[in-house]
Amino acid sequence: MGDKAGTRVFKKSSPNCKVTVYLGKRDFVDHLDHVDPVDGVILVDPEYLKDRKVFVTLTCAFRYGREDLDVLGLSFRKDLYISTFQVRVHHHPLPLPVQTSPMLNDSFCSQIPQNLPCSVTLQPGPEDTGKACGVDFEIRAFCAKSIEEKIHKRNSVRLVIRKVQYAPEKPGPQPMVETTRSFLMSDRSLHLEASLDKELYYHGEPISVNVHVTNNSTKTVKRVKISVRQYADICLFSTAQYKSVCGLHSDQVSSSSTFCKVYTLTPTLDKNREKRGLALDGKLKHEDTNLASSTIVKDITNKEVLGILVSYRVKVKLVVSRGGDVSVELPFILMHPKPVEPPVSRPQSGEATPQNEGKLPVYFAYLTVCVSILWLRLQGELDDDLTDLSCFHICSLSRKVLVSMKTVR
Image (tube, helix red, strand yellow):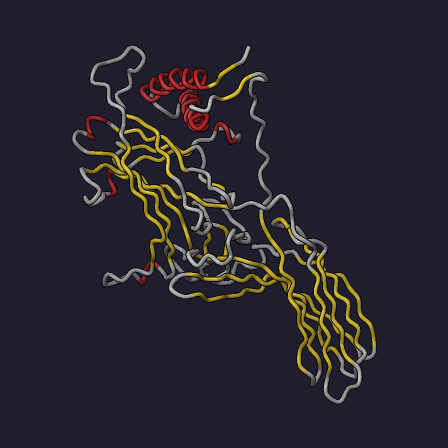
């Protein structure tokens, strides 16, 4: 399987190998105004299907307790969204010259609502076992006579997918904050000013914190503490907030003096792997992850947003002798950059007709999956029947794409 995104296909079969699901990707991007549709291809053995139907379920669930605590019918899991729909697979009773595969097949497409949270995993402790807490998405395909029928593992396929967000193209203004504190029995005050060099940072990028302290008081600043804090708002039955320190620096400032220094902190998961409850990006099996990306909410006043909302702040704290503490916080965004998409070549004088314009992305996605299946066959990973199926669909979808494109000559 190649490294290029265009040739990568995710495949999973049921334990009895009668149902197979293909997905072109497992990360679906939330663009704030819309979310990438979840589309794929499903293959079913007709001899096994018989009078059954094929269903696909898209689920978003929030697990807020350890899996080994699910006893006596009490489950520490809440389904935030469930959508089940039937996939009407094609069936040709007579053999066709262009289709010699016995497998029934069809594509499916489902939409993720915008108010659902992104995929987030809460880091388990060293002694924790079972599935980690957090928000995850799952696609499940199964065969049954009706939706109400009990789903059996032997004829069902489960694939974990992720809903992700990428950094905005236009970052906000540079974060800066200042405060002044007066003390009892001291005529003059303590002034603290802190700023970041920018608002948006990518994972693994160092954060520069500029701290300027003017201590005109008689108090001594025993310690200047600079820390990066992750805040996770848990929105489920009620709203709760948890924080974790991802980095720390400290210094000292004498009385009647001025202090100015630029601190550099790099919040990474490598230095925080032992912290239970730290929010991480949704993790797929056998893949490493990183600190959870900041959550961008289109409408902050929307009360229907559930799940885990992640934010980051740099906290500058002055520990003053016999006078209390002085602190300020600088919010910033920590995310992954948006991947560069390859340019789509189109005829210079061509345009899509209004009738078929919405169907073109589906045709191209389906065609990409079929071509990828052929590539896997050449590598000896798939059987001949599936190759025949891909050949048929490549011819069929190529005709649809050509018909849907109107070229002005």
